[in-house]
Length: 516
Image 1: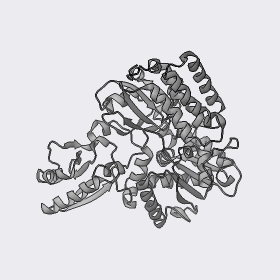
Image 2: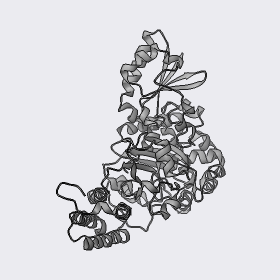
Image 3: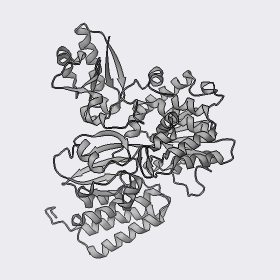
Image 4: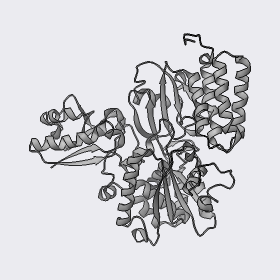
């Protein structure tokens, strides 16, 4: 029997993957060929979706993008035997996009059935959890610390230090909270992992629970991820029936369970304390710190708050050892990052590799430059609050410190590309407008400053006393940076300042016709 793989990822289904899967079965039956259809996650090459893969003696041969109307002709032309044609990509693992990655978080994504426990175990699943149970909790924390893993949610805080703080804090009740409120523009790595390999997150959270003495975990998922929610709910139930969650996991004597909670659509709930407020059933408003969540978190108890990619990295660290993970990357940025290429990009998708690759390589070599074919004018990394990097400065290594020195931030690894037609004054205005819309309203610099920011930029672009208003805008940015309660207001000046620095010509007054 021939095995055919078609993604069930929401990016693939949005362009017809479900219909393609049905068409493959029908065309195979009409040709008298028996097939086993496996629905996987995406390989991350989104410009090739729907991607159909056929298992052959040489390996998995890919065809894409495949439309419903193409399927019958492709089957007739020998697709089920891996026969080359104009849609044949060759062996998927040998494509440059796949060959050049170091896939740890994405090790199983696109390869296995995300809801098959047998597939999960046969492809290395549970190895990290089994090794964790061979160590004492302090030993697990030590491995994570040695790995150099830092939070992938944006701040880059060392994970081992956070875990040790929770482990060392007295408390009869502790929690693990996974922040899956992936709301930054150009970010979708969490969704790809949750839809393509949900058991890896459950395993990572269970290891975290064992390490710090927590018996309960919560996944806080953004409301827009309906497909990911459905996969997670089913995965949690399967894990319970397999004995991977609940009492006495894998005969270890350790008990841990996980619950899924859906957010209400507020961007601010991506901030950890606002997320905790929401989990407690309150309005998502930022808490003042200290105390930090590691000491006083969910329901006032010690709490680990990590994002999806951080927790999904943990099973590999435990399975292979902290030293092996630390061997990847550069300086204080160890391991791998899942970069997401979006915006005006020829080849968008997810690309996982060790820290240190240049932004130019990601955008131009793997991303293929702009989709429009025009020159890259700016790239925004780290979501809507990230700085704009000019196209002439893309030889920037992707590590936390390198980006920091350049006045930018790596954030969650989302990369949004703009060509020469972008109006950077409008993008700066959007940053302030976005902050005004999404602010929780608790602190004045963010709540009021963002509204004033929109007004001042409008005056500058309108030619109204530009020198005084530019000085006022800079003062406002400094106030928001220094005075805001959280990163929402504190980081909003980043895109504004970078736009002013690198693209000052866009802030000159427009002529009536709309030209500069």
